[in-house]
Image (cartoon, rainbow, N blue to C red; front, top):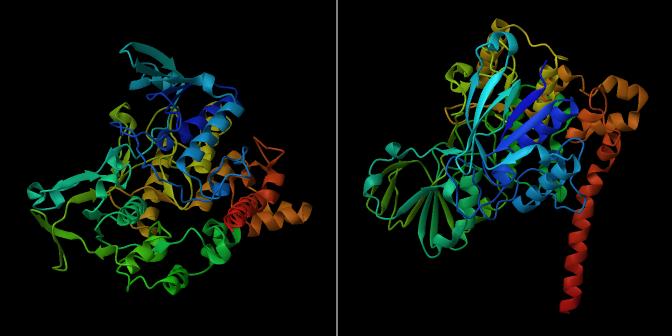
Length: 514
């Protein structure tokens, strides 16, 4: 029986894991190597080694109703798309509300996690931690939840760029980027067109002499502000998900690409990728098309070579007198504190059953939470994973045999490779609704549409046609929350309330001016 649980990391995944342990009557101890909670969302002016890092202006690209935890809505007066400072404030409110802080040991690094000699019988782990003062301590835990993420180790592939050693300017990874201060009046090349690369190119183009955005494969770019000025996330509904299961993917790709190209022709803008729309998570950036149209960002293909201050691209074109190169080239991932025999490799990825449990251990007492990419925010997905994990730890949910889990992992790897463009750096993609429903079914909290249709038709309509917010997974089953129904019915009110506040503020400012 699992009682004492070590949670490694106090970011959004660690916080919800601590809460899930408490909900199931367990005793969690959360070890956080820094001096504060928040993980990725705790901004620091100087990036710290082996820790996630963000830039000063970062605003999340997910609508607040789609990123909050299932039983603690974000305040209605918070903006629809939140600056990192607001997100951190929300985490503090969440931790205070559920009294999580007392279970977190800050400035305590986990050095090693190893199976105890009697692991095959007890499933217990030896954990060695180290405080900021260098004091080491040994612990015994019944189970481990790893919540250290996958944005800690920047991928800087210098060997793929011939002549980089001759470059006369400065170069760094986007992990080190904090703001455009060093770009004033400079000629800048940004390598990589993910969300970070797009943001940095746009922000830099406002102060730089010229920004070049180099992309090897292109990208589909979508807007946060969709039709009628509403958040694009509202389209992530159960009805749309059902259509994705019924209609041919070729047709859905054609329809989606036609919609995006009606806003701006991706081929004309130099953005059109080699892959289809739903084969890779798109870039979300409202400003990039205008910066391209205005000439302040010039899209270029992959870099062929670098010679002094000249960058030569695959199409033979060049960028002269380049001062700065930013590598927005993704991240490697690692769990240096875990034993090698706890890691099961499957293709490019670490193979995890349900993207959570290593399938090769004798006892299911090690879980990794938050180690996925999807078309949604990590917070509700990590929360669902944590609820699933603690049900397994408690014994309410029994996992299949090792052989069956390994087979399921290999099938997942094949499915991911079939449905998505995968690589060493992007091997972890899942579909948000499909994945959340899969875990919810195991926990016993998946919304029963037929039951809702028969017993609560207004709620049925909201669940089917409305956005798949995490509140839906608190309507029934273990962990049912009485406020879930109200949260679902008021989620659009939260959106409009903030918009109305902005309109009122702008109107008052205008009246004062005249």
